[in-house]
Length: 145
Image 1 (cartoon, rainbow, N blue to C red):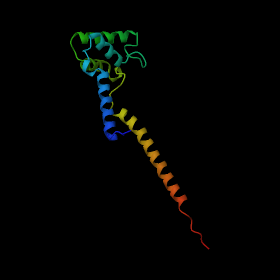
Image 2: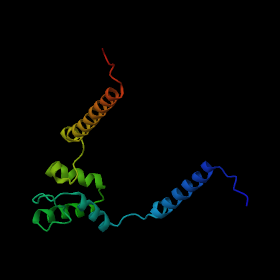
Image 3: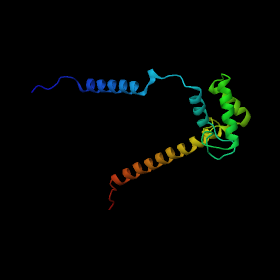
Image 4: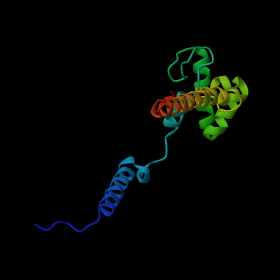
């Protein structure tokens, strides 16, 4: 039985291309339709935090302040505003507290970078100590008489 003479890299390349094409087609990138106003409102409401609640989105909350924010979102959509314009108006009124995911910057960035830097520094220190200890144990101690 004759073995295939196709190089292994070519088989992997073909597999990668087929998988990429399948993922792109399956994702619906080329068949997406514009959002309806109700879909836009739902998407925006899920990104906005209830002004009177703790860690609930406007879409999840039934409070009066959430109803007011939902009404502002619907009014902005009806007025033809973009999502960014609606969010900017709500941020001007309520501040960054109205966003479920506040923008990265300042102290927020520092709160993510410092722990990551500490983990990297500790891992490096442990690695250096382990390598030095292994080397010191591997070198024979000369005997003196």
